[in-house]
Image 1 (cartoon, rainbow, N blue to C red):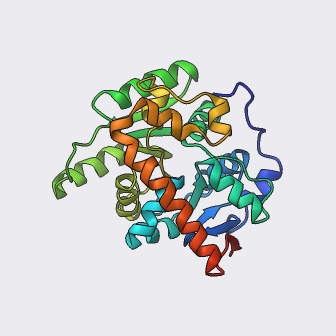
Image 2 (image 1 turned 45 degrees about the horizontal axis):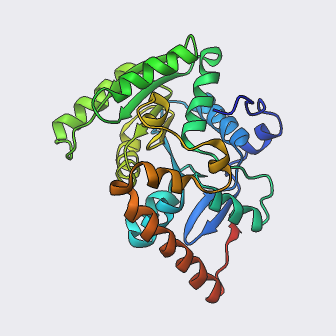
Length: 277
């Protein structure tokens, strides 16, 4: 983590109180044009105004997620129905700034999770960790509680590598409701975590579901994060590819050209990146 924390909500609160966050359209996906500070304020606002209805869900999306949305109309619909879609990669930030949203910053899953956990002891927010390989969620809870004394992780669950049976789904829902978290953090891969959140949100009476993917591995110490300079220069993909070439080669060596080609086609067709309501 960067030792300098985002500012406490100031101007960000004004944006968080609006009915809708500012967004821009990127290849049919509405990306929330926010900074990390504004995303934190929005999370606090959603928690404070929740009155027991169905959960909202948040997609944290980079180039990989945008490419998957081009292939999968259902995943694109899930993103369009999300309460917030944060820019998880620098290319999304650069495109948003070109569309006029100069205040945008990267809202990276591990950073958002760490900062929300930092604020949680003072605000009384409770957390549930869903996902990761066996033992990872528990290790993550232990590390975050060490870094943020007073943090309450009310429960964890590691799902099997298969769809849950209906009775297993009911058991998970009961477990989450019994834990009474304010946020369920979902650490699965894209598009699995987005599908899970969209399916579970109407059935969960908690404020927020936030899909953070590899944040479970990074913040638990199981996998290394790219140096900050690589993250800020848009080169994190190269670091991750070097660490896990067998798993990630297709995502980056195939996915990045597809993303750039889709952008070029949209521009040629007169559909540039633009703000949306």
